[in-house]
Image (cartoon, rainbow, N blue to C red; front, side, top):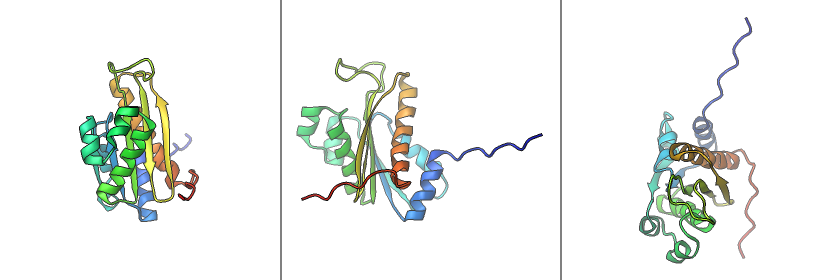
Length: 173
């Protein structure tokens, strides 16, 4: 009988190892995932060495007061937008004093979609000293599936950064 191949590590364990190796700390800002990213990260023993905390900011007011998302950004672009996701990631990083901020905002469904923002639309963003990145995604599952896929996509973005697969941001003038 052929030996079984080892089961791949869950993404949150890979990320935990990389954060530890690089001596980096992380904060998350979650909207549509409702704390699922923080839940996954804290399932890893020793996560307190790198995961400082998270903010679940579901309503506009919470995004403004807790994360410092601009009122104008929310009303000009909406909660589910690239500018909002980027400001959420920056806010998590700033408020919790970490090296990295990771954010997710989206429309999990089954309601809440609009013609220009359908159910399943999600933005994930990462804020670091040297990189800022946002990605747009569109899921087609039910609410729980969309939340799970959004959390996974956010962790994939973080993993891409930790693996050196993101380009550094150009210097600000």
